[in-house]
Image (cartoon, rainbow, N blue to C red; front, side, top):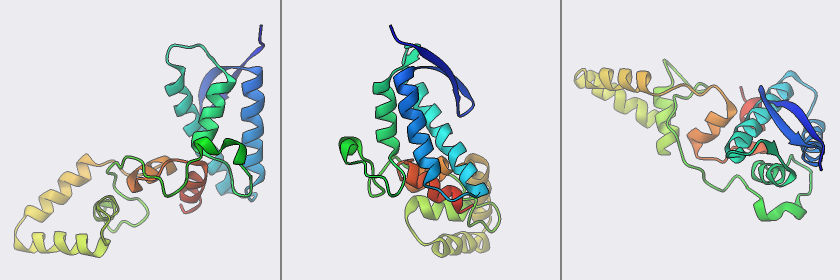
Length: 185
């Protein structure tokens, strides 16, 4: 028989066994201690907890209690903060060079009007100036550029979270990538 704890992670309530809670709490404490004490660090921790909650929802699959095996898999998938040796968990180590599926978003960081050109440039892997010139030429030659821009503006959501910024670039939403995109806001 194991003791269970009801916890709130990323705004969601979960039932987690005591061993898994201890492991996850140590991970979050280690991550928080590796960061500088600023307001951006709170945003990074919120993003990290949100990502952990999303992964926990995926891994539950009909179960009611999150166990140590699930937490270890989630921590291995997200990764460890800088300066922490995760050699014992290297079988699930994700790094920045690994690619994740890309999703198209409007880029909120480098926008002139709505971020359509910047988001399209990042998604396609080309220079943003090239995309802006194409839209400008299409606008001058007729209204096709205007309508294409408006359609992209309506269809594509704007990046709001660090996880969405990772998805736009095709990066896995690891702890380090989440930190990088949260502190650049």
